[in-house]
Image (tube, rainbow over all chains, first blue to last red; front, side, top):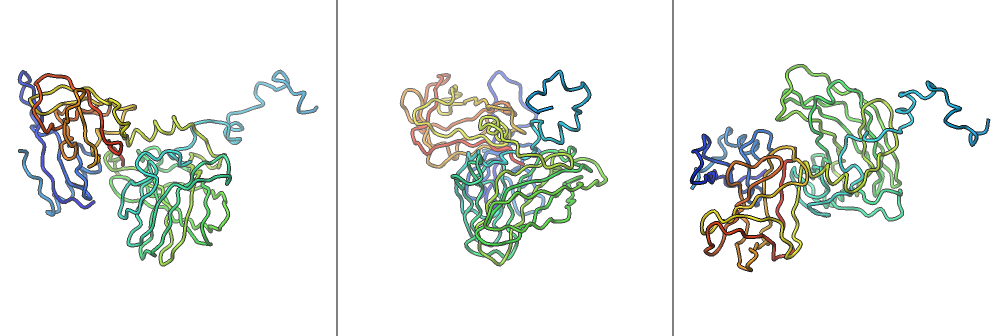
Length: 65
Length: 331
């Protein structure tokens, strides 16, 4: 997979809901030229590849807007 | 006694054993390959993409390596009935590393140290040798079997072989440990290679190919990949405007997916609400919203190009007939 960018996506939290322990819900990544919403879940092949490239130092995930 | 005179009462209770039934291949749900008859093609019926990926037939993962060619749906016509389609790999520029057509089968625990029988129908545009091989991932490590060479000719043949899969030590890793079932194609050559009727079954007997209905096979495929293809003007989701710009829609999957899926959408899809107002080009706005997504349903937040009324409930439809949303939990 050719991953050219990755950025966390913050959760939408309803006004009356408690603050979640994990502020992000996904990574928006451009993979092989296509924007992909990737869940933060081990076993997801896109997430696994993103984290592999992060560990290898070849990819940085940008913070959520 | 003539066979036609044999009645149920003529057969002793213990005359037909489970072994005989199994050996005669009369049991259903034997084939552990999904889409072995190549009936389901949700993504596309043709692709020239190289690199590892899922491009055409559901569940089939490919890599043309440094070669070039086309993977496509082959209409069987009157060949090898009742098969309808085959998977065609047309190598038009030779590769120096073996191209691979493979299926990853979920959960190695089902296969560790098991005897399995693999069968498939194949032909080629000329005589070539195609290897088949299993790789049982265990503890996130590869455990490949010895490759089996198959002499493919220009006529359809059924190939079968039985192998006992590896029995590695270590602990099962649910994230990574699956069984890879590979067709390893020739290098330094150009050719067309066709397969259909691919079957993997436990035990040492190759039984007749298990033909499943399209609906049955589609549901099996949708555990790993689901596409909402545009049926222009057909509503596919109802949402709620969570602020003045972003409708949030829950989409329920037709079957439980393997894991919470990744989401993509076509660049060409433009999505509208039921008032006829443009909601916006989905890509790259489609994404998870609340962390409530799971294997059964997903929250997708669209991005409107204009102002919407908060808490309104838009019904979403695609204006562009080429639009789609993909949900992917492939291995």
